[in-house]
Amino acid sequence: MTLLDVIEKKKRKEILTKEDITFWIEGMCKGEFPDYQISALLMAIVLNGMTDEETFALTDAMLNSGDSIDLSAIDGIKVDKHSTGGVGDKVTLILAPLLASFGLKVAKMSGRGLGHTGGTIDKLESIPGYRVELSREEFIQQVNEVGVAVISQSGNLVPADKKLYALRDVTGTVDSIPLIASSIMSKKLASGADFLFMDVKVGNGALMKTIEDARELARLMIEIGKHYGKTTICILTNMSEPLGNAVGNALEVEEAIHTLKGMGPEDVMELIIKIAGLVVSRTENISLEEAEQQCFKKFNTGAAYQKFEDMVTAQGGDLTKLEISKRIFSVRTPKAGYIAAIDTLGIGEIARKIGAGRFTKEDKIRYQVGMVLSHKVGDFVKANDELLKVYLDDLDVRVNDILDCFTIQDNPVEAQPLIYEILE
Ligand code: URA
Image (cartoon, rainbow, N blue to C red; front, side, top):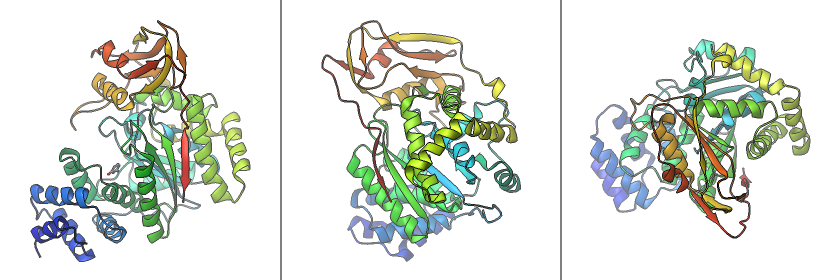
């Protein structure tokens, strides 16, 4: 067999066998195939799709391409959460310590920003001193003692995904549901948790632009989870406007801290309570209402914030040194009306341009820059009202580029739902 045979087969819309897929992934990891052949196969998959069986085989081959984390030395129920990526998504920073405050064990490996979307690891690195790399022993010990640790993905966790993702990023082959599902699930399965919670973002700032696609991605991830005996719950949530108000690393940490103290923006609070409520009701066998009530208590008593502080301290971070840029200006609307839409991808790209994200792997993040939105979709604004504040260092931004991200109209608009549906 050659990789060309596999490409030809997928081009003819034939179903690849487990052997075909294993041959591809194993050979790729050994460096036996040129990038142009791997890219051609990826494009054939994007165009012709994959069956569930092919996707299971791909997930399996990717999972077997590197190390898996053994969490058996951690006592208790190990939960993991993943978001398919968005703008202003600081959920992990809040959810992980909140769940740990219930005694659940959160041994979480997170990623860096990708394209216009932010990454939890970059956000945590905005806390001076925070170590995103812990040895395996330190990681396990911290989860046992504190209940939560959030670190970056270990070097050899699903190396096949690293190779494939880098190629997909530059060959227009990211937006394939089987490729996304196998990429995400191979990493989650390698991370060893018992219970997986997936936040599938939908909208103009997300990878999935329609509910139908998000539903299909969720279905496939749940099927993969089932295949491996893992409870997988997916929640489909709105990413047609940034989540919360803050976009940018240190600003999002600050907003996460407010939320952990029970004073976060409404949408962030709602989403966290919903996700944590679902996880806690399942793992503790209590009703959803009771679980949600208990989540509020964890905020109000300071227990959730204390877990966050304990985690940060254990990982060497110093929250008193969190820095937000002092070069701030307001962007104001020239006209009155209702905010009908926010171009979330556009906001994410502007955040990236002012230094909150990267354009090349080598780019250094400017942790203290970003934006804080003053309004959500559906709000009424008067002429000259502030739409958002920009926090800059030495890079500039064009005000018109920001204004272009807001659609303001005369007629009222219906507020968008934050949570579309829950699938399991
Ligand atoms: N996130 C991932 O980890 N992989 C994808 O393919 C898309 C989003």
